[in-house]
Image (cartoon, rainbow, N blue to C red; front, side, top):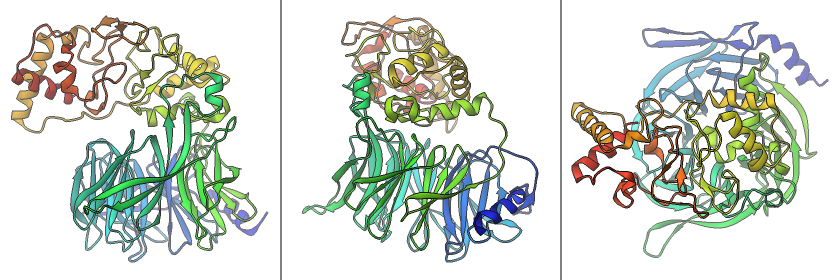
Length: 585
């Protein structure tokens, strides 16, 4: 055992949980030894103290782990909430983290006793991910469910400098090396946006042929790489199609920020490269980093590997790491790669030259897995699909949806692809499948294992585990909650229109806004199927496409173009009120 490994074992008992204290706005999160074990579910990491420490953000535990590279000491500070990401300000030796529940951006200093919280910035929006500008003057915060990005000045005490509203749910964000542009990637779809930080506006946007963006990194001031997947809706989920990568591809793509002759900015895809090969998939490509020689390192979250690509983008090696690698860091000397494993709650240390794992660092003790944790592991496991091409997460990112069409034999045959539904808050939305053929969620899980994944399928215990995990997925917050009394009156008016127009016949309030029957709403699929089970209307405002085949792109057009079984035609005021009510769900 090397010296570093000895220190890590010796200090393992010093892994700590923290109890936060608030005294007149002064917060302290202290390191304190404990014998307790807990699930941490680490989601991101960053360097601190000039590469001497790694800060790991633990979402489920509500904590920050500090890994000291030389001594091997691991400590943990409980800050509460649901931290999503942490960045380090080297200039003033502070860390910044964001709470995914409250949207609070927390600035803190790190010392031997723990974390001293210096101040909190309330953005008013639930936080998702962070990015820091090169000069460390700005921290960007993406907010998925609020469809916004905030820019916060780091000095003197942090305040929101700008707020950008978007037409999609943002996820990953990244500043260009010169801090001129902030790139924003879609959480569930294909949007890529460039914000000109100096001009304070969006200057470029594109839709890529892809979804499930997992990583982004700049190669230069005007070129960046993203990792994502591509779903081919016209390719049924047969064994051969899956094995050949014809259903879902796992790729990286290079994009150029280009100024046109007219002076406008466009985001132009330049190169696309495959990561998987036939019969050897690369499910759920996540974080990507690049070294000084332009070698790329990509975490393959669905198959528990890190892919090493040469400067031309060709995969030269795939290294086995822990369960669900989600983040990567290069050491100062570029000789080691640190890989954060979300579900095994470890860090794999990779020797880049010799292409092997030197050691595995545990972030602390964990309890025995319950049915929920076992189901969570299944949900993110790309090995359950044929040859590891995709996982459940691939189409249902973190339980939601990519909004695309998939031909999964859900109605018993192929040739009539259906829109991928969200699983958030859907535990009581029986029956399942667009034709209502699955009477229970257990039946749907079994069916997905057989005809969507085409792997070994699910055992009875695994089916129960998966259902238990799916039951923990809460529905998103209301798309547009009431903002004042006038708005509440409009929503109440819309509720009355909803009931009087007959909408409640199929979308039964007040819990699920669906029903267990099938209805003919005047449209059919490619095989003439006309009876469909109505989807829940909870969170309907987040949907980007409507009906089983996504034929409508705006909620208003559901009623204007198709009538959608209204008892009587609605006037403009009634339709406005109805739309506003639906957006409040």
